[in-house]
Length: 78
Image (cartoon, rainbow, N blue to C red; front, side, top):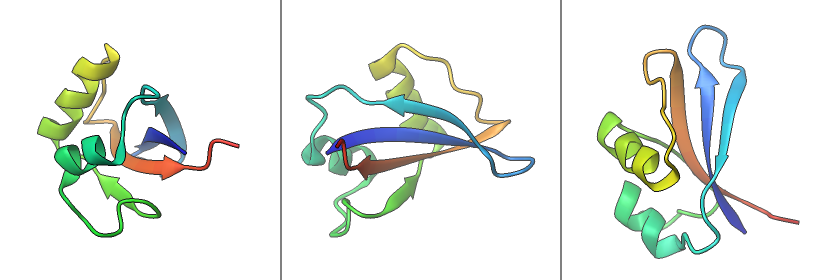
């Protein structure tokens, strides 16, 4: 399983960004980022500007929160 941040274009909802989080990013890290939801795996979580800023620091990327909506989710890595 891998954790990814997906960015969807706000104008037409197309997937425009996909950032893979480091291999050592765990379910516990996800819970610290978005909250301790019981369904962390199998759900998609919208990221607030503050949460997105944490992702930007972690990945050394720059997000465009005005043009895109970002979500955290776990995906099968096979």
